[in-house]
Length: 284
Image 1 (cartoon, one colour):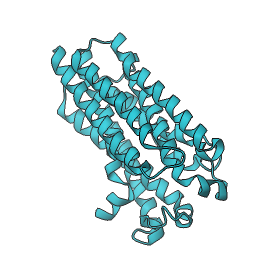
Image 2 (cartoon, one colour):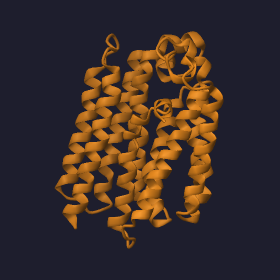
Image 3 (cartoon, rainbow, N blue to C red):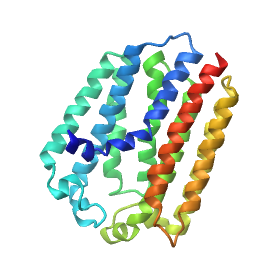
């Protein structure tokens, strides 16, 4: 179990899971649907199964690339801790568990489950043909708020879309920053990424632009649903974390990329979700 948790970098669940809770409790507090423990558990299981599938498949598909890259050659498959066959089996099992869980939720979630898997699994192949791979990753995580909202209601609404757009821009932006570490390797191996295509300076500018959009989208729900002071505090904190990570990373100094990637973004998502939950309690 420890090996498989390492394979899927389970700690990175901290990025999308808080926004799934936001989508879930947004539905519970703004519609006629009431809180249901079983639906909450199934939502969490869907998040875990989908992410396990995506990460395991990514490690499986990238095993040869990871073996060549000095930064990733010690990952589980290249180092021999987990076989490629085991990683693929793990992917298939989690895909089936994901689809099976959605069947117990509602028909819309079930029928959309293959689409969700196509997006989260498809990301792994995109770096081979497009520099927009970062946006595809962002899209995969952006499904969390909308998907969680659908778990409760079984229908779409505007407000969770704003949270998803915020996640799309936020994740795409910080993944561009993370990809700065591999710019030379990507160029040498003819892999596609924004840093390899635009260079370090322009990649950081695009990342900044995406994070500005993320901040705008996280503000937009204010105009569509009633919020209180805790939500505005959450916005301020989330935006400050976006600014802070750009202060940490410079084109000529990438020493704090991992801190900007994991720590600041992990804190940003969790704290923002906490203030969102407090806000839901406040307005009730």
